[in-house]
View 1 (cartoon, one colour):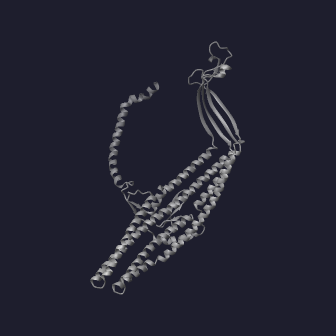
View 2: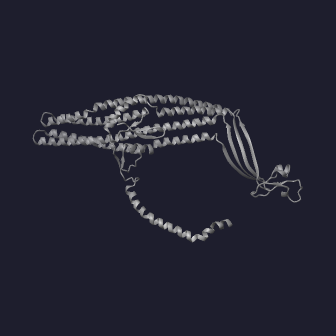
Length: 509
């Protein structure tokens, strides 16, 4: 009670002054912060970055970075790295010293030994408090092998994360380009409808002048009506492409989205030149590195299993205190022995204790060597060897798969590049052919069927040309991923994927 009074005495003497000071500080803070909050709140409600009503200007960079930061695939891979990091700590903890604090209390109600032998064993109350330090000296190589296995598992997890990042970059690029392609299809179909409207109007004028028949007008109207479903289909494809892009970059469906990046033609020319360098000295894929590290971890696992065949040596140091009071009460003093603590009338040679704490320390070594454990160690070794053999086969399969993916990606890029080169002049020629067909029809030399065929060929040429451009970009990105190179982006940059993360690199102009 005295300590509590002394604690609150200053408060009791200066209580009114402290209360007045606190009240004044709160009042001044309210006056100075309220206007600012009143001004900031509306601004955040209108222009806040977290408002879903604001239009998100999504570029290639933003889309890729959002997918790498918020994508479920990357987050799941990062969780695997965190698990591997925790396993390293678990493996290392086996060889580190262990310190434990122990305390206990026991009360003996009736002691048979005291009743049989003598009262010297009748310590009814026992208090213990000790610290135990254990240091493994030899564990058969389990600590070193376990740490090596854990490090290899962490490296494999990071390599798997890099592989996932590369696939996510390609997926986002494919989704973004698909959205741009479908938006280009909408423009082509709108232009196609506009041309059809112009042809219908021209046919009606020629019909009025007596230079075209009613059949030609009806035919053109039907053709124009048949073009409307293509525009509707293009719009639906664009909506689906945008939804897929939203899913990859985690953009809410209620937030407006604007695709602001466009294809860089200069970047396309540099891309065609730069991809040729991917055919020589390919970099090592993260998938192969992950399989190699997994095999290293399995090999270390065999050593961990073999460690159970060897003895283990542990040093133990225990330092604490022991109290054996006669009465039930917590000891509060240092233990001492003397004849003065004995009951009155005791002999002078008798020594008694003062119910205090006595030091209790010991040091020792423990050697443990399992001679027979029911063949558990043998089974563990066989299991570890089987896992190592499985990882060896898996490594060979991954290497073969990577080689096949690289070869398929090179073939696909060659096909896309050939089609791109072939489609360069097709659109210009189709435009010229359409203009000539319209001119021939106007002068009465050509027919309506010639104009329809020219318009259909023009639309096909425009669609094929747009598809060829997007196929080149996607084939180049897939080839870069398959060969472990920086993945080129359609806006001229590239995304370099490493075990530590992903960063954007600028290509030479």
